[in-house]
Image 1 (tube, rainbow, N blue to C red):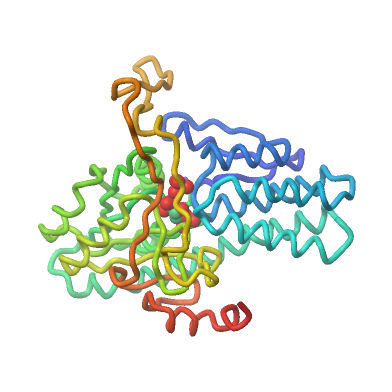
Image 2 (cartoon, rainbow, N blue to C red; image 1 turned 45 degrees about the horizontal axis):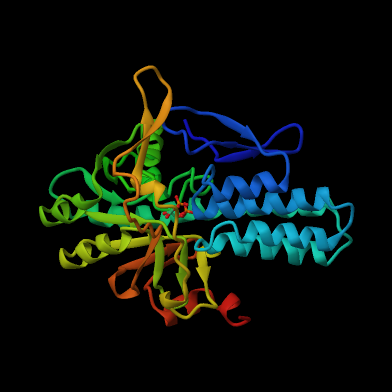
Amino acid sequence: MRYRAFWMNSNGNPEVIDQRLLPHKRQILELKNSEEVEAAIRNMTVRGAGTIGSLAAIGVYLAVRESSGNIDAVERKAKMIRDARPTAVNLMWAVDRMLSRIRTKELDAGIALEEAIQISREDVERTSKIGQYGYSLMQKIMAEKRDNVINVLTHCNAGWLGIADSGSALAPVYEAHRNGMNVHVWVDETRPRNQGALTSWELTQEGISHTVVVDNAGGLLMMQGKVDIAFVGADRVAANGDTANKIGTYLKALAAKEHNVPFYVCLPESTFDFATPDGSGIEIEDRSGSEVLEVSGIRSNGDTDSVRIYPEGTSVKNPAFDITPAKFITGLISERGICNADTDEISKLFSDITANS
Ligand code: RUB
């Protein structure tokens, strides 16, 4: 069973799965206006770079619907949505694309909705192609293996909750499974928000064998030869291939380099930031310390709850993302194919875009 992170209901509003409650509860929320869309992105009711981009586009549509033709009001709300989270560039990309589309015509909610839906449609096409390219790598590895199972390691959640319809990092895994390949996934827990639980939930829905490991287990697994390939998603990839993704990605890439494990970043065009030369220009989101100091889960009576695991007043820092330097990345898998993580290859593959930027 495959879900979308959000869809449009008969009132013309987006409904989202509250990802904060997964995998324990599948609760649906209707977002009735652009402010509610902004809040849902900011508080991680919905998350994942692609999904927050495509939902942001719907948020701009709602802003147009609320505006009575006042472009200043739309731009104010669009900025608010654009600023909801700082690292995933898809958010800025989608809002900017929406604004340039609606500015060329009379403010028309129909046009805004059409453009927002087109963005979601493109996600579906792009992730499907990412799946096919990633699967071709898995086939090559499988052809040389002595056993008949391929072990993939992934970090965070970059599946269909993170970007419709196939995910980014999980797209090759889904494609491989659909084609009958025997796949097993090592799922990093991904503290502090435990997005590994989302990945595990998705893989369970798809009937794919997987094992959750604590974030620090990946190095040992690679050393023991238990990882054939690592696929991760991305929140922003700079022009030279430096990659911002969930905190902990960098350490996995370092370990992968040491143990000759191929380490691939999977991303659609909307996750590239061609205007930022390297990772030093990417803003890293710092989130509330409470995400580290507390853990949430489910009680035996079925209620969700959170408990504090450190004494009150404990000093904490909570950077949500890190930068993996391009030199540790074996390749980038996008809808246009697989390329090296370097400025020349990226700009060649996306020459139609980079030539104009
Ligand atoms: C999500 C995260 C994901 C990327 C991939 O972080 O780091 O790996 O966003 O996204 P958060 P996509 O949970 O803090 O949003 O699925 O679009 O490729």
